[in-house]
Image (cartoon, rainbow, N blue to C red; front, top):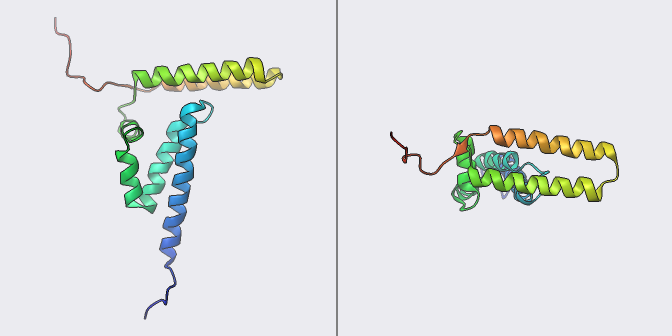
Length: 140
């Protein structure tokens, strides 16, 4: 018996995962430029949502030039590139310092902003540093 155009409940669930993955991807992309938003968790959430919702979107995300290797390296425990760490920390501290010193007049909020920056810095510094070519080792 055909459903007469009725969608299966699984399609709705997959659609919700795709929408959630897309929203998460957008937040992760914004997080690249606003260090207050955590980029990596949003990108990983996007990958998980796309995995459940759309094989095509999941493949696209993992093969994306800008984000794919970042997600794969993080998921595989390879870490973040040295330049990625430097760029992230630079943007983080510039944004936090500007916000805390010029945009916020509340000392408690300023302290919270600097505490967040310190915590994020510690997290980033403790991540493994990914090196594209580790075959070049110096032998003495």
